[in-house]
Image (cartoon, rainbow, N blue to C red):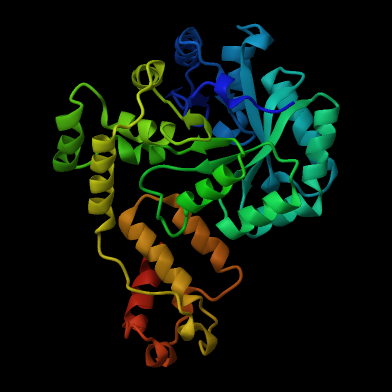
Length: 373
């Protein structure tokens, strides 16, 4: 059964950042938000085994599954590689998810957070792609795909190796188009060229694109004074062909109201509006960067085997996006294979061969302080 993206709601309700009260999910408010969302004619809910410490799928059962006919909504969840220690864990986790969510099947099921390293290795080791197809044959999964946080090179390999994949979920927003860690424009282009339906996560970058300095906000407000700054980020992604559903992890009814307003009568970005988005992007991207061209001349002779260009790539991303947890995750994965920035002995071999004449020892020391926190 192929996916008809024209019948999918453009706005998906992400259940990762649900409202809480006294440290637990606020069931009453979640029910109100679910009702508003469903009444707006939208019905795609995205949860995961690990969200809210395992309580998100339960919240979906209580606020959605018990209160609406099963055929009226679609629910997606994910298999977490980091919870798999042996093959039997896969079936155990899936059965637990069905029980938590109170469903006999999931409309969409994803291998969670594929990227280079452990997650990808685990999914391949236990042949989770074949397992997903088996679950489809059993009627326990309607559509099978994965969420992706890796490189464009890995994405191409996955799609070549697993043509059975029906959709892919990626992080995509106007700031991450050229983000050297996320590389979302490249990921989007690969998927769009292959006509693979795209689910977008982090369209507002965890709230980072919901508001800036007064000067930057004013650029948006001058053109659309009645619209929120966050709506521009959603409209940017919604204007891209091939995007099936855009997830928003809404935490308040106000956010729900604003997002429904954006998608209820959706307007793609006009040409002059896209120019404003590009202008804002350029301003944010103008933050000083380390001028490394990743030639890797510095790597061959490094006695501590530090992947210096990747360290600089991480620091450059953090300078633009100080709260980006993914950059720290990228670095933590990097040092599983290479030396830490703090391992630098200051021998100077790298500086002698750097064609950009960068003060690498000084920059690596700065990186060690930032990444060691």
